[in-house]
Amino acid sequence: MKIDILSIFPQMFEGVFSSSILGRAQDSGLIEISLHDIREHTDNKHRKTDDYPFGGGAGMVMMAQPIIDCMEGVLKGTSARRILMSPRGKTLTTQRARELSKEEHIVILCGHYEGVDERVMSVIDEEISIGDYVLTGGELPAMVLVDCISRFVPQVLGSEDSAEDESFSDGLLEYPQYTRPADFRGMLVPDILLNGHHANIQKWRREQAILKTKEVRPELLGEVEF
Image (tube, rainbow, N blue to C red; front, side):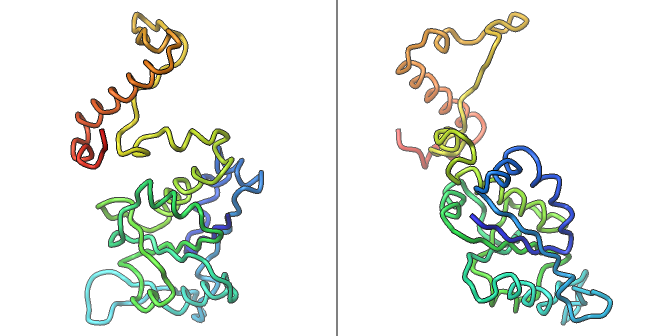
């Protein structure tokens, strides 16, 4: 999978994308991530990428020219799924991340300031939000999106079951997990996890996932098949 990211602060991504699972995925050639500085495509001699909004209002708006020129320079006539990280977009879900992981090429635009000139939408396929709140820019949401999508790219996690056995994969939050030692300061691992009976363990995990979901996110239970 190829991922291109358009930003005015590309340096923000370096530590995140060079570490841990995403770093190994790139080293293995499973994912190719490229960062592009929108400022390099502005026709303004001061490398300006924003201006005051028509009609007045607080803040600045990112200009269409440098963004669209950057997008065209990245695509060079090829096709890709073009995404704008925006608080007005549809909320990112596990299902959407799984669908996007099947794309061969994704381009992610990071908005900033008060948003982007609406004419930029002529080169955007969809807007995605990571939650009902506003951040200072689209860089952090873009990192979240890339990380979330990458988990569903074959071989990135090593085990094909890992991405499917997580919170939200079946509409429920994840069940409790334990590792060694079985007794830590008097806190014991449930006996059922130690007896090796796979069917009973799966039943217990399902029950615990339902209990946790009922406690923390009860609204999700209406979407779950029992």
